[in-house]
Length: 215
Image (cartoon, rainbow, N blue to C red; front, side):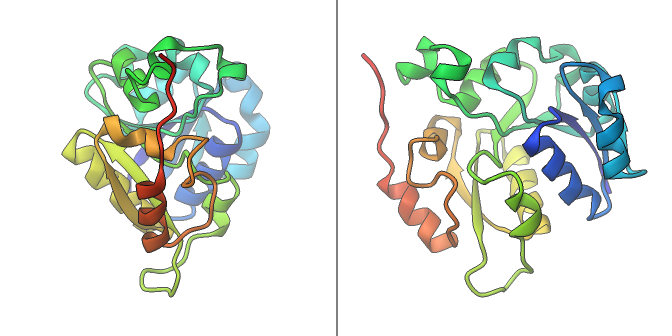
């Protein structure tokens, strides 16, 4: 089993950690406030988790999950994440994150925006269109009727392989959206977002998606 660096200890980081630890993985988790603030979470997660700084978590992980507000991307430890797969759960909320012209104009999707700032990493988008608690509650074995599906986007083949395998391991059918330039189909204003859908329904919702950009 692997060791995963989890950057972000909010709802997604916590529930993702619960899910992967239950399947035998180890987690090194960080937040913006420092590892000393994570004692309660580590007690909940158990002996397969430890708190660290963001740089330490990135170094320890064989790959990393980034589950932070988009405004925090500039502070990510780029050197420690170099050459690693990074799955980003981040969504863009202009009211929270401030307007970002690169995204508003359609020049970059959210994960492409992150990829531009982690130039030496291999970034994919995953777990951004599910309520955090449902990462733990909604998984089911392969072959279950109406099994919930989740989508991912990535340019790199290794990232796509990791994301698809991880979804299946956690109990979800995996749907490949395509490269990072197609990741907008999973944005907050799309029919794919935070909806319980099986694979056929998810593909239909991906096809229905319409991109909204400013001039």
